[in-house]
Every structure is written in structure tokens, then in C-alpha cells.
Image (cartoon, rainbow, N blue to C red; front, side, top):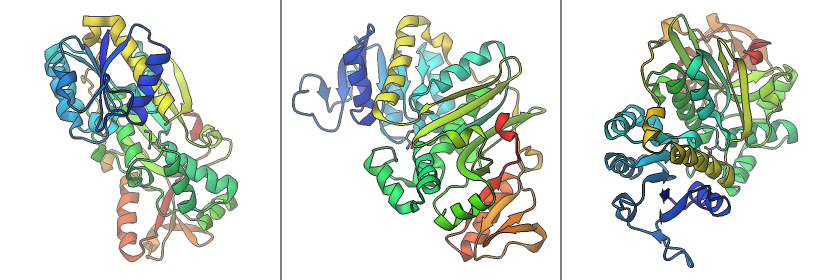
Length: 391
Ligand code: HSE
């Protein structure tokens, strides 16, 4: 099958290299890039029409950043009946419903395994599980940059800014690292995973999020004194038809699985009625792992050919997204702030920080916003009960 790749950066270039090494019946006919690198004049173009309007190209791999022009190009490819594999979490998350409707209308396959979990076959196995099972919970680490930072701060005693700069040099952090350290990247991956798991469109703004921008070496020392390790955790669960989801720094006991995930690796678990708890871990970012995940989806589509559309996600779930009133996720929080935590919420202390009564993630976000007005360095983290690591 002849394919076109939109993007020649980290992931697009990674996919091109993987196909060069392992063609698997795929032939890269054109690659879209901003500039044409020396030696690739015949292959690389700056004109998207050379891919989108070429009837020989049946499959488009999309590895651009951000919403536009990615959404315009992918929509056009689907309208022309071309299959699409995307690594673009921001675009897939924002236009989940629209893209699936377009793919169904035009009989095109749509896959996006590399958009969450980098090189880990996470979304593809989540979809596979659902064929004969019901998923009730998801939990884990879906951002490599923040895992690298939290791990290095805990194990090497290094400071936040220094480690963040290192992740940028290594190419793991997003172009604007705010997406990583404010939890927005994990929020999108959480929304995409939850949409698949429950067959309902979950938007990023439906997922309350707390980031790690303000975490300090002193916080990490407080966590150690509490016998805890911090990880940026995605949590989704369904209770009696209501889905609750959040992304937040979580203080875990050292024996929990996520504490053994180091550097940029990700680790995500699903719990299903029949299969039990299944865990997937590995490189959550990087050119070769994420590029290979894009190629794996391409191989699946090429094998199915015109039938690829039948394997697309169908949004037919009956669950509803839980508002605050029915939010089943509720934890005490570690709060370090110069702002005043309402006394009725305080249940104890940890060094310079306070421990609150159990709050929903939404209530914790509201508390963080209030305290942030007084102290921009405010930091909150959920304190998870022991044993919750084995959902
Ligand atoms: N910035 C992302 C991460 C890249 O650190 O996980 C992979 O999506």
C-alpha cells in the first residue's frame, strides 16, 4: 500500500525510518515537511496536495503538532476515502466525534494508537479488550516528561527547572512544555482513552487536571517523610453508569506499580470484568517507539484494506460523565501554599504542607485556583489509599 506521511519531525521521521528498515508491504510515496532536507528532494514535498490529491496514496500517516493545519488535512484525506493513522493527540482529542463521523461517511479507516502511550500498544489493546468485555477503570502514567522530572527529583535530588531543561534537550517535552508540566498532554491522552473505553465522547475539558509546575525539592522531601512517591496519574472509573476521570499528581506507596516506572516510560492499566487488570508499560515518547506505533497501525489498516473502516471506534456507550455530585474519585490532598486552606478542610499536616479531608478532583482544582491567587507556587497532590495501585 502506498502511504503519505504528514510531518517529518520526531514521529513522522521515526515512522519513515521504521518503514525503510521494515517495509511490511508499505511504500512511503511522499512526506510533507516545512523544508526539503538535502538528499530527500524526490520524497519530501512542502505541498500537502501532493499527498491529499494523489489517488495512489491510500493511507495517510499524520504526525503534525497541534490542531491546524492537521485537522484540515486529515479531514480532507478522510473525505477522499483515504485511511488515516494519527499520532496527534491534541487533534484526535478535540475532534474525536467529527473525525469518526467523517471516516464512517467515507468508508475510511481511522487509527491513532501513537496518540497515547508513545510506543506502547495501549489504545489498540484497549479497543481489543472491548470486543468481548466491559472496562470499568483505567489508571496510570501517560506523560513521559513529567515522569522523568518526578523520578529524577526523587531519585537524584535534582531541581525541577534543571530536569525540565534536560527533557527538552532530549526531545521528550512538547514544543511548549506547559502542555506536559501543567498536565494538559496527559489530560488529552486520558480523554482519548476514556472515550474508547466507555464509547462516549470525553473532551479534554471534562477531565479535571492538576499539574506539577510548582513541585519543589522540599515537597519531594515531604513526600519521602510520608513514605510516598509522586507520579502524575491518569485515573478513570465507571460506577453505576457514571464515568469519573482526572489527571493529578498522586502520592503513592513505594510498592505500587507506577513507582517502579522510571525516566520517560509510561505505564497504563485497564480493569475489565472478564480480563481482570491488564498493564501496559514501555517508552511513552521518542521517535523510534512512537514512529513504530504509527507504522503498526498502518500495517493493520493495510491488512484490512477497504474493511478497515469496520474496525473504527464506535461511540455507542450509555455511560454518562459524572459531574462533581456523582464523582466517585475522592482523596485527601497534600497542599503546600502560602494561601489559607479553609480550616474545615484541614485534617493534618506534612512538614510545611497541610493534608485535607477527602475531595473530588474538581474540588481540588477549585481549591488550587483559589490558593493560586495568593501564592503562585501552590502545589497540590492527591494522597491515594494503599492498595489502590492494584485496581
Ligand atoms: N511530551 C509527551 C510526553 C510526548 O512527554 O509524554 C509523547 O506524547
